[in-house]
Figure 1 (cartoon, rainbow, N blue to C red):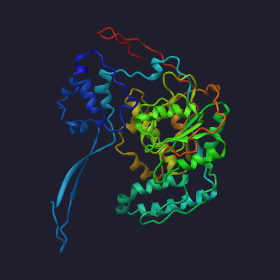
Figure 2: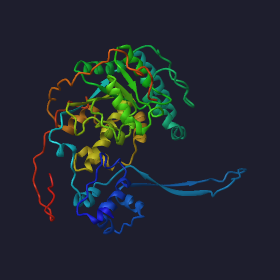
Figure 3: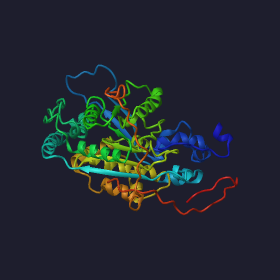
Figure 4: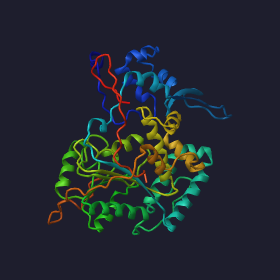
Length: 440
């Protein structure tokens, strides 16, 4: 009702679509219902919209009669439809291009500081590589059995993503066994790379927020907490069950006041609602494989009001499923950018692929990732920027004379050298209402 009563509507979102056509159905119906009705798409016909502009999987399950086997209840067969990832580029041409103009943060804030993203691909140590290859081989053999793969793919993928960061205290994997047990006290290569990055940022008087996705049964936050503390770095951990959502802003400000230099958290806890202006450096120790989460969390510091250049650093182990996940994530991000008018051949291709990240990772485990750009190549091609501008030190981090209260408590649970993005040439086009300028 509000959109229909107004000539222009501003829709605020950092992530327009997460790979599924249905993500756009309801917002298009609210802001451009005439276009939907012109295609005879009713408000209740989301599946009709997806069948036209997305991907549907029709599944029929049939029970086979077996002598001596009696079914307790239910029919012998049933059918259902499942939405799959994938968006037709025609959706942009028919609905978004005719009714929308996309405005980025950089378009409305001329004084935003430089933004730099990078990826650090770390080789594994010999011992860690042996342990990883051993469990990887076992999982590949197990997933060759399609029945096992269907049941256990999630557990298998989580194991391979988490094992390099926690190669100890791992429970046995169903039908595979326990991964090799490695040292709990050794500092592994990616941990050292993260530590070096944090130290280099602190040398420039810049705080760092560290993101980790395994924060429950395969929790790595306490290990990172202890690693930083042993190196004299004031660290806190934000955890969902100890800091409620409506208290996080106050908690965050409290950590800054106490002189905390590093905060560790799951990106899900800060991906919306928080501006981490006091932490101009963001480090993704783990990324997971949710493009929504990555895109939101990676911009928490690059906000209006930020005075310092922002660095985002992604870490992964070389030739592991972590690196495959980061490469696939890049393709998914490109697909999202394509729906916002930033076209590339790779983005359009990824846009049409009806495969979720978990399925893509499972295939990568079995067959590799031929034809998918490296993470470094993706980000360099995406931004096409010159060498990064030097990032000056921020205001000093004031350390209190005594240990800040509560600092020892556990409170929580490459991508190319980028300089400030050059602004494109602009062409002004007046609309009928004479109120809006479109930027090309």
